[in-house]
Image (cartoon, rainbow, N blue to C red):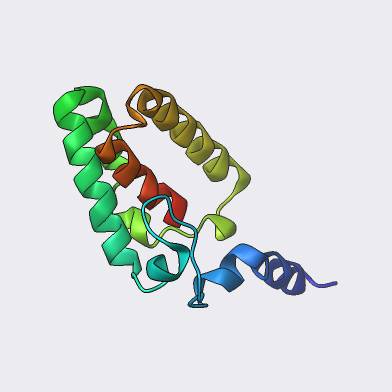
Length: 120
């Protein structure tokens, strides 16, 4: 198998196939799955940003995630085409965020921030 064929095969993983498909249902913490399917990426991002801003007013440690998980560039980030190292760093960032988030999980802002991560 040629190098190009191998690269294309890696890009054909389910994650990238799902990016182009509008599901009839979508996983969600805040919405019914059928209702969530009607929202676009920008809506979920706005919900997440709103939650992060509210969390940051409660605990400033959440501001550090504005530059990573809740950055404008995060909307177009495609994990499936990233290197192993980039994905490992992302896993570490998500883990750190979730550790900080856990004491606030029952608060609506925490759930709104988590909604963005569930979408992505």
